Image 1 (cartoon, rainbow, N blue to C red):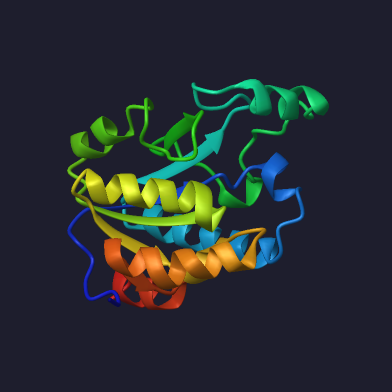
Image 2 (image 1 turned 60 degrees about the vertical axis):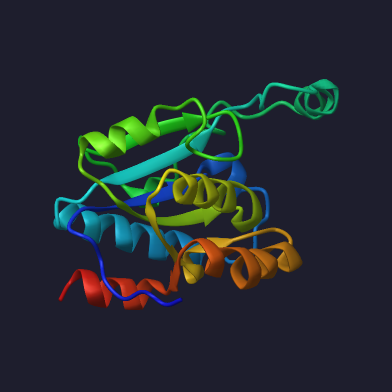
Length: 187
């Protein structure tokens, strides 16, 4: 399903566009960052909520032996979790630090969005098949109208990226592009 309209108060959620992850070699980072920064600016210009999500080292509770081994195998730079400066910032932005793939679990995000009257979420970032998909699935399960600009996300695994876009996203939200979204937002 393609994007038909924007609700009165949509919010933009940008997932894991942070220095450490973006330096990991994802293909297409400059294009995604440019589109994300453009949308963040447009949402702020229209006084609409922007949610900037980063992930902290660690991981979800549960089986921890494999995650612990990966974590201790390398030291992360001090600025690993810092958001990409291209995104800019505004005092009204909602900042979320997550410890799982999705931005909703144990972060207070749902409450913050509902307090602002948000019913529609535009979601992008990295990785399509992990952080973006998990956040989109949770948004759908929380009853939000989900919008997915597919040119504002990327994944290190192209097959996984294509599976999310082709098979998962059409079932839980409206598919669009950054240009189509900007056209509707600015009209």
